Length: 93
Image 1: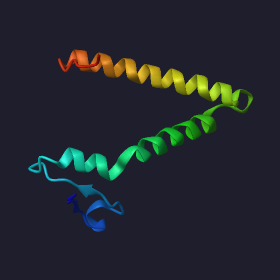
Image 2: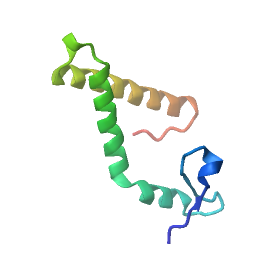
Image 3: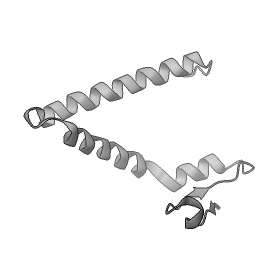
């Protein structure tokens, strides 16, 4: 069973958030279940829309958005691998 503690809106100035106890050995799994794969899909689609909006009119095309999004994602993944190595976390096989 997934249990979470919810903060009152007044504590978060208008935001509602679920917090999982650090003492709960299933907290990570519960967090993943709460969001599921749809959360990642939504964030990626939002990033694509932001990229579209940020491009100058003369560069605004699906091909250019794809080029920019792939450039940014490739850089982020390279940085992730470098960070894992830098902090001795390895495991990026």
